[in-house]
Image (tube, rainbow, N blue to C red):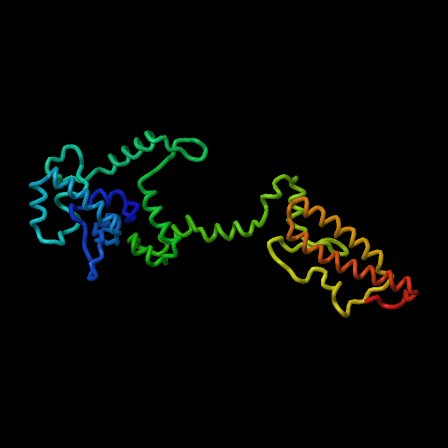
Length: 295
């Protein structure tokens, strides 16, 4: 089931020799899709083919006469199977014609899980069902880049909508982008809720507040006026620049304390621009040119 995506009922009902090959001699499992009431095929690997051959050997040893009679019939044989099974029922089945029962499989699966002591992350006994093998088969294909149209064919679904369910179930691309979007949220866990909200909101000090651009986004316009050649500033703007410098220093210290070095470095650039602007204004004041632009 892990290797083919078959439902437990379809896997249990396989005939003794379900293998067919294409024109390039690649192996497939031929089975009867009970849900859709039609014949279906799924490619298999060499390793899976070896496992099937091993199981055939066990059946041949247990039912030699029935195996010989089965193989004497021309292939491919009719589906659904009426004859020797690849996995025969282990009780009340003298000729190997009855399939292994789904209920027996499920009981043995639960007993095996309990015997192995398999638990979930909370320590509770794990709840594992046969259908999860089919889910694993499908989601593995999706996350390895197999197109949904191909997954639909492999699972023998009636519609693409059913196949898309597996794409939503375990899409590692979505998870990867979500992880990237979180940035360094883990380093905010020690903060109070209000502090977390502030840290998520603030990235750069501005003359009259802070920039609200999300932390995950970059911007090359942070206080760009400070370096703009047509930005006019005079001695009257000195208090505002000094207050801005104080807020920037405070913000840098807070960002460094939280380990947000990237944002701290961005604000250091602002600090350098402010220091240059403040020095120009103070120089103009010292020279007595307080009415001249310092830019």
